[in-house]
Each structure stands twice: as C-alpha cells, then as structure tokens.
Length: 158
Image (tube, rainbow, N blue to C red; front, side, top):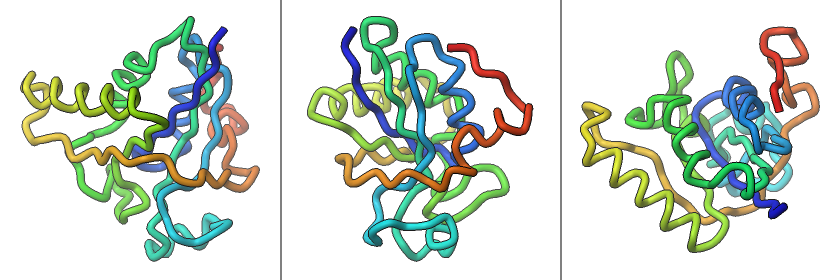
C-alpha cells in the first residue's frame, strides 16, 4: 500500500468531501483551508474572503487502489471548473477551483488533465482551475468534518 495525499478546492467543502469519501481507495478526507496568509484560520475568518484561503478537501488515498489521475477525473466532475471564485450560489475566492499539488508528478498530472479537458471540448468555457504548490493545510473545525454524513444526507462507501 502506498499512501499519498491530494488537496482539492471545488466550492463548499461539505459536498466535495462526501463525494471523495464514496471513492474506493480513498482512506480518509479532511475539510480545511489552504492557500491563504493567516495562520490557524477559522471558518469565520475564511468567510470574510480576506484571508486568501480556499475551502479544500485533503484526500488521503492508497495509490495501489486508485490513481491520482482518477482523483482528478472525479474532482472535475464534482464542480464547474470554468467558474472563477464561485460555485453555484457560493461566491468569493474561498470557493475557487484549485488543486494544491504535492510534488512535480502531481503538478504534471494536474496540468495535463486541464489541457486534455480544454482540448476535448467537454466544457464550453476554458478551465479556470488553479494549480498551486501545496502550502499549509489547516483542518477545519470538527463540525465541518463529514458534515453531510453526520446529518444523514449521504452514506460513506469506502
């Protein structure tokens, strides 16, 4: 078993976390914040849209069961990656589409997937997803972890 981490921002982290938890090979997920300049941000801080953080989900996965590329495929189906700083009714930089990469291999794969999707015509508009080096991941407050699952709105199939 080879454990890796991947971090994705695709709007509000509640639904994104629930979707990643349904994928076989995903070992764990954590809702959190990344990409900003405030240490130990809270949800209240991030919601001001002044910290630079995105709402993200950090995915711990077994790459012998699921590839990073497969996680990228899932990520791009979970949201509209052509939107800038918004998803559905949520708007602000904290809801941006972003991939925080851990190493050059993830950078290459993320950029290749974006190029492939742009060339395919899958989306009418170009992909707006940012690809950024991973920074400090700040785990969100406990009540955000598996938020929808705790409320009986999804079931987890690992």
